[in-house]
Amino acid sequence: MRYGIEVVPFGPYAEPGPVVELARAAEAAGWEALAIWDHCHFWGGVADPWVTLAAVACATERLRLVTDVVPVPRYRPHLLARSVHALDALSGGRVVLGAGLGVAEDLGPVGDHRDDRTRAAMTDEALDLVVRWCAGETVEHRGEHYVAEGVQVASRAVQAPRVPVWIGGWSRPALRRAARWDGWTAAVIDETAAVRCPPEGIAGSVQRLRELGVGPDFDVAVNGTTAPGERGLVPEYAEAGATWWLESVFGLRGSHEEMLERVAAGPPR
Image (cartoon, rainbow, N blue to C red):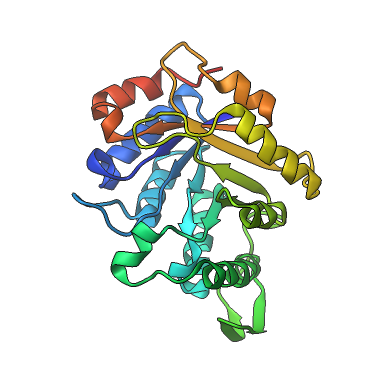
């Protein structure tokens, strides 16, 4: 099991500064990644994930930087590729692109929502383009949703063979999509930190992923909360097949000072 922190970018984390403080504390305490949600709006404000992760990249040396998760249909793929590549270059190759279809409550109020089938098709077509552009390719493409006529976004690749892609979502199509990439990221708690998917639920999905042909290097990330010095359900999720534990940090859990103390106490090893 590897360990990171997941930042919910509302409340005290709607601005980059406090997230950077968490990142510095996390790296010093031995956490290996910082993941942040990508939502466009929320009462009280919401942090921009790209600006925030760029600030984290400049403040740290080792933390993996994870988008958890990008609602791909909201973005034009060439612009998404440009942001991913720039962040990967700035961080020296530390980016993991967490990606998904997005959720209605985030997409709908700003006119970005489409039916599931359309968003799935857009996501599949766009992800292929994004990773090709981030690898430095000049792309010729004419698809159902996107066109590229001799388009190059990045001059060179930073990570080899490419930026890792983790897919979010619980549906069978989401698992099939994840099996084509590098990992699956699963939200197993709700906004009150109550467990909504126990380890046995993760075990069933991991079994399905194995049936779909994922290899031993495939990542499975779950989120949750633990108290300092306690492991909670971490061993059970590891037994179920999870490879990453993302300690969820959010305003409803406690003050910024309390969250800094939790992060500074280190991973639940």
